[in-house]
Image (cartoon, rainbow, N blue to C red; front, top):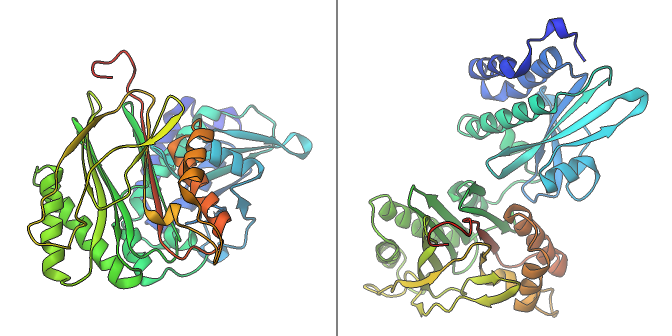
Length: 401
């Protein structure tokens, strides 16, 4: 590593990295990070690996834009980089002549963006704490860079997105988030051709609002239906109104703009963060599945009409209670009904089995594994398949838990 006299002690050097990130255009942040790792952390080589849309490959994002996609791709399912990504921990790998390669998760809250690979010659101990902070800072900057450049989004794509899929991906919130009370993560398939499925969530000091929707059909019309439904619900939510009003507003606009047999099914949940009480409504959608103490069961929510079928439709708020340790799974019928031509559906039983057997996984990894299981079952997915996993982690000794 670099001589001790050439580096400032401790993490104060991170301030330099913050200043440098703030001065350069967003497409140059990889170059800045690589230079800082070389000059201030003593790295011999470094590389940012961005996860692709399918979460199967970690793609190299070189500082030189023209050189990107020419480096070594790492598979999420194997190797040190894959382990660091799946398990969200720092992995060190010894190389020839005492060299050390460190693989660090590049994660914002719980949204997994990729891996920072940093190689050292092994002459000095690796400062894992400093590198971890640098990777966390890089994640923060990458999330902000999305607003200014397409560079990193393009690198994550192994082929062009269909227009409907572009609409859906732009509609999505951050794919994962976590607070002491809960962890949430969502996943969509087919990633490059998604058309009608989407999910949304928003957190405040007192509540978490979550929705999942499935627009009838596929392609551009389904994407437009979904976009109108989600945006109408967001608009109402941001006016301070409850989920019943959110559903009613979405229904009214869908009926007005898409007359005829066009509709959107959906679940809307509003969770009280201090206590875990849930207000929910079901607009013609499959019920959520609850994993509690090793047992899986649907939450009994009486369905109302799908959104967009009838002007003036009423959406009833229903109630249930989350307990510490509960896992809640919201999904679209594309998960359970996925099948090869002429073959069996993936089915409720497979979903329940995975909920039980993969209960130890964080929601981000659970939805990835569920998605891969569906793809492995049927190959090319012919219908949108979306899942949202929510863990209620409020400590048991907290009021209302």
